[in-house]
Length: 70
Image (cartoon, helix red, strand yellow):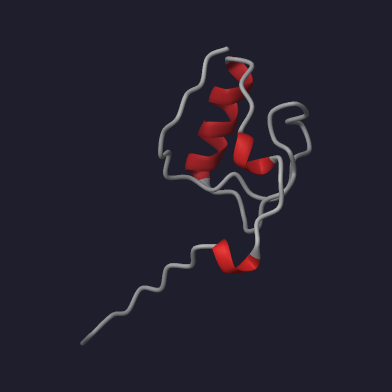
């Protein structure tokens, strides 16, 4: 078994259509361009995005707020 552990700054989104076996479907939010590249990378190498295989507790979700000061 090979495990690739990395922080790939992308959002794979909650829609797993077309990514059976790679995307588990348990994600919130929308997919972005980096997320598309991550999914294509995973499909091409027959990998699974493990954190999409289970639900996360709401208290464990990370939310980043950006504040602009003028």
